[in-house]
Structure formats: C-alpha cells, structure tokens
Length: 485
Image (cartoon, rainbow, N blue to C red; front, side):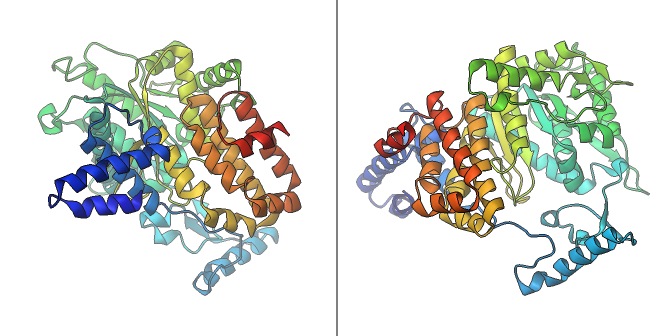
C-alpha cells in the first residue's frame, strides 16, 4: 500500500489514466487490508477524500514509535544513560537507609523539562497557581484548533457540546495544556500576574476573534486533578457563568440562558472509575454496568463553592454531547499500554449507551507538540495496533524481560478487548493481527509458555471470550481451529 501511494504521488498530472488506475488499486488494497474499515471510509467517499485519508493514516503508522523493551530501575541501556541509572540506584539506597534524598521537579523531558533529570530524587510537582503557564496556553490553542478542524472535517460542523477527559498527572506534566485547550474552546484566555506568572483570572475573547461559535465544554476530571487543582475547577465554573450573562446570539454562545455545572469528577476522597469486572464481562449487562460505573464516578459537580452530587447533571451532559476527547502527551505510551485509557475513553462510550448519547469519540495525539493530531478513537486504535502492538520489534523487546514482558503482551490484549467491548471501535482484522503477532507466532507462544504460563492461559481465554461474544469474528480457519481446541 505504501508503494502504491508513493507511485500515486509521483504520477501527478502527467498521466491521468495511470493516476485513475492507481486510485482504484490503492482503494482495493486498503479495503483488503482493512484500512478503509479502520478509517470509516464508505463506498460513497470521493476518490480524493479516500486517498487523502489513507495516505495520512499510512504516514501516521510509518511514523509511529514504540519503546524497545522496558526500563529497569537503576540500569542503563546505553553508556549515555549511566549517570541517570547511578542516580536512581543511589536514591533508592539512601531512601532505604533513612538518609536524605535530594528533591527535584517532576515533569516530562519530552516537553522540554530537562530539569527533571537526573531521576532518583524526591519529586515535587507544580505550583497549581501557575497553571496553565503561558507556553501551555499557546499549545492549548493549537490543540483546540486541531480538534475543531478534525470535527469540522469529519462532520461538516463545529462541535457544539464537548466532554474533555482531563487527568491531573497530564496537567502536571504539561503545565495545563489540556485545560488551556478547554478554555480556548469556550473563547476564554487566562490572565497572568506579571510579577509571578501565576494565573490571576481570565478574560472573555470576543467572538470575532474566534472565527467560530463558542463550544459548550464539560470537563470530566480525575480525582488527582480535583485535589491538586481546585482553583482551576473554580476558574472554569466562573468563566462559564460569565458567558451565560453575555449579550450574544445563542447560536454563537450556547451558554446564554443555560446554567449548570461544567466540571464533574468523583466524590471527594474517591479515585478511579471502580468498574470492577465489568470491563471484562463481555455481555450487554457488563457493558451497562461499566457505563453506570463511569457515570457514578463522575457524578460530583466540582466548579461550585463546595462539591455537590449531581448525577442528573453529568448524565445530561453525556447525553447531549456531540464529541468527546482525551489528549495524550506522553510519547512513551499509548492507549493500549495502560488500563486507564480504556476505562476512561471506552468507559465514556459505555456511559453514552446508558444515557442515549451519540458523541464522536476522539483521541488527541499531542505527543509531538509541533504536530498535534486529533483522530477518531477507531482510527487511533488501528494506528496503535499496526504501528506498535503487532510489530515484531515491540514483541521482541518484551521478550527480553521474561515474566514481566509476557505480562505486558497479555495486558495489551486485555485493553484491546475492553475497547472492543465497551466502545465497539476494534475491527476484527486488528484482533487477527494481534493474534498473528502473539499466539500465532510459534516463538512468541513458546516464550509465553516458558516464562509466564499464566499469561499464555489468560490470552487464550481472552481470545476465546472475544470470539464467543461476537466481538471478534475471524475468518481465519487456522485461528478458528485453535479456538475450537
């Protein structure tokens, strides 16, 4: 497919008949490989639209990165990292001996925070009064513009109601990029104190400067965000209430005449989504239980003077939203490497099924600050499977870590199954690809059997459960024979 696309790009206007032939060949190859299904390209799509989207997706997969194995605390993979590893070992030994461990800032080196190195120090996080920073606000504007652009491209209109899934850990790493994005979608910008760079308030941007309507944004925040950044929840609520008082046309300002909370999260003292076994119960009852758990863990309004339980409020916001987004800033992970992505993103989809909502699901890839990419959740799953999970290089990296590496291979399947079950965004051929790369590879199967037979048994059971539930309808006779045995 990549070769056909390269040939297509060089054909240009020199040979229209050759270009037409290549268009048909590219679409046929993309359909056979399942790429058109991954991207939701139907037969009604124009040739120009289909080729553009296929080319962009193939480039995304080609440019995808994944870690070569796991980091082992205190061990360097190359001579350049030995100083870091030495600091980690020293910090651990000092802590165990009850000696002082020097403090240091936390954050992501990928976001230019080189001051967090070396590791092995006690971490202090951030000054919540300085979030979002000026740089984070500038990046948040870019994220907002990218999300609006993609929604307009996909649906022909602006998103009118949007739910943003916001984590405290990401807010610490990026100094508030995702929160700044949400503010810009409202048409609001922070105001900073010149002396301290702390956020002292906000100002409302005129609609003329936005070149689009204001977007009705609801924040679903984590327990950590609730605890560390209560001032941001309050600021957001104040901005929404001020927007409701503006003398602006309702089709440009959806807040006019509409009150209510816009920041929701778990009850004070509670953390996580508490889905229990629902994410792995591949029945309609299991999916409903997961959706109800998401709603229950999001049922407290946090933008008033005191947290207030408002289960009806969050249910209404979920039902009325036409888009949902989670932003990812860490390049060393992806949405199939941690259970939280499935719980939060696919959990929202399950909550929609409970409330009757029909929001488009987006995953905003902000791992490259210069090139943020908003992708439908179905497309992001396909990119991760093709670009990392089904790549032999990733599997070989995990195989260097024995028992733990085998557990990571099994965990990726667990998370893939949760997205298939709760959100219905995993095409069957992607599960085929992961089966081929793991249990379908004799060397990988032998590794699992030798290093972690429990992981092998769990994967066999997981594949069988996905098939039995109708979430994976493989047409491969060799796979079907293995499931039957």
